Structure formats: C-alpha cells, structure tokens
Length: 369
Image (cartoon, rainbow, N blue to C red; front, side):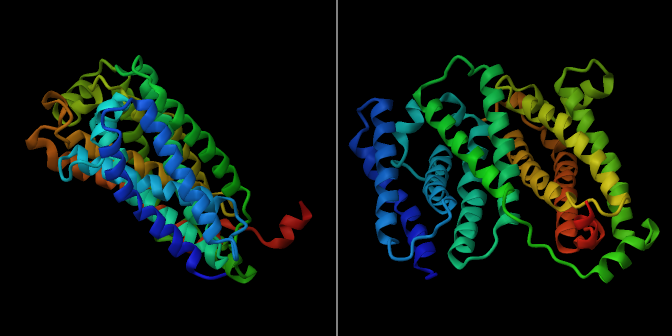
C-alpha cells in the first residue's frame, strides 16, 4: 500500500490549526451548540475528503479512519492546552468560555497536552503501521490503557466533583468519543499476537531460577514498595485519619484534597486496579508460562503513564489553587517518588515485550489444551 494514506492523514490533522482559527473568528458570537455542529461538520468533511483521496488504495482496517479523526482532534486538544496557558491566542477562545468547566482545571490542561502530544504520536504510528500492513497491537494496547484511565477518571470525576452539575451538550459529544474508543479497544484486543520464539530459548529461560534472572529479581524488589505506595495514596484519598496520611497530604501532595475530585478519583482507581495488577505481576515474574504478562504490562503502563503525567503536572500547575499545590521545599521529594513510581512499570513493560520467552508457552502445550 502506498504511504500516501498516512501522509494524507498527517496533512489533514494539521489542517485543524487554520480551521480552529477560522471557526473561532466565525462563530465567536454564536452558541455552544453551533460550535459543536460546526466542529462535527468539519470533522465529517475531512473524513469524507480523506476517503475520496484514498479511494484507489483505501485501507480496509476501519480503525484507520477512527485514528485519522482522532489525530485531527488531538491537534485541536494541543491548541486548547496552548491557549489555556496563554502561549497562543485566538484559536479556541469561544470554546474555552462555553465548554464544560473541567477543561479549565489543571487536570483538564494536562489531559489536553497528553492527548495533543502522546496520543497524537500513537495515532500517527498506528496509522503508519496500518498503511504498511504491519501489526500495531503493542502500540494499540498502550493506547487502550491510556484511554481507559483518562475516560474513567473523567467520568467519575465529573460525577462526584464540584463540576458534576455543569454537564453541557459537549459532554454528549465526549461520550460518543468514549463509545467509539471502547469499540476500538475491543478491535485491538482481538488482533492476534505476533510473538514467536524458538522452543529451545523458552525452555532455557523458563528453567532459570529467580536468582539467575537478576533483572526480574530487581523488579520484584521494586514492585513491593510500589504496591505499598499505591495502596497508601488510595488510603489518603479516602481521608484516612492516620497521622502518616495527614502529614503526607499536608507536606507532599495537598492536591489530593482538591475539590475537583479528579486527583482523589485517580488515586482510588489506581488502588483498585493497579494494586491487584502488582500482585498478579509478582506471580507472573515467579511462575513461567504466563502469556498474558506482556499484554497486561502494556495496558497498565499506558494507564499509569497517563495518570502520572496528569497528576504530576496538575499538582504543580498554576491553575491549581495555591493551597493545593505541592510546597516548594517538598517538590524534589515529590518529583523523585512520583517519577520512580512512573518509570518502574514502563521498564517492566519493556522487559516483558522485548524478552518474552519466560512468559510464553510452547505451541505443543497450546494444541493439547
């Protein structure tokens, strides 16, 4: 397949920059519904244009068109984040005034930047893989984790936070985005794995004890305090009366008490899902043949990367009230702990995906089952 398909999507995504500027000037005095209709019409026109442009060698994978639209919206989100921080002006002024209030929170800022940079890169990589007929399952699973974490915190945070009563028509549009994305998640999970190892390599790795795998031993040592820290912050979010929890909140992470409820929901979701994940991962590092380990680490790494980026950025952002920001003298400890907490699962994911022999099973065992 020609590379023109991927190039066309890249060019179409960049068209969001002049389109946003023109639409902001054109409908500045209109309603939010008019802006939503105009935005949807633009995306539809671009999708139809791309379809006609690619009609000779159009990709058969429907996710190509989903990610093409998402790439366009990611650039829009990047524009929103830049305008919120007064780096640019005149592109999304009307939207920022009429949109759901959560977009103007520090958490909303970080989501805009994450979607406009990291998700945009993942969309382009998956589109390039589809164009060349390569597998994009690994990148797709990382995106699945990132999307699920973002959507879960967004929905629950809006429901229980101080913006729960400010649900406008744009929320319906966001729910449509979530519905399509969930369908895309199932499509990615249904793709076959491309991992293939020689049985001799698998047998040699799986016969090696834990002491013979120093990297895995190091991961186990790190995962135990990581699990404890995950549960500890969940207890802090639940307003634990312990002196340790109270001191930690006041000295290191007062953002956990922010009335927007996004950080509290973030910590609870991490405790309820990341906590069991770390226990399962400890089992997978000790017992050979756990084929689900590479996929599980990909999903969790994407989720934790998105969560920690939003949490760290929002804890330090000027949009967060001063009383809920990390104190200046505590920032080095805060950054060190949270960066380490973010990097350990990423390193584990890299180890599981690049050296998966310990987690695979011979084809003969699968046939017998």
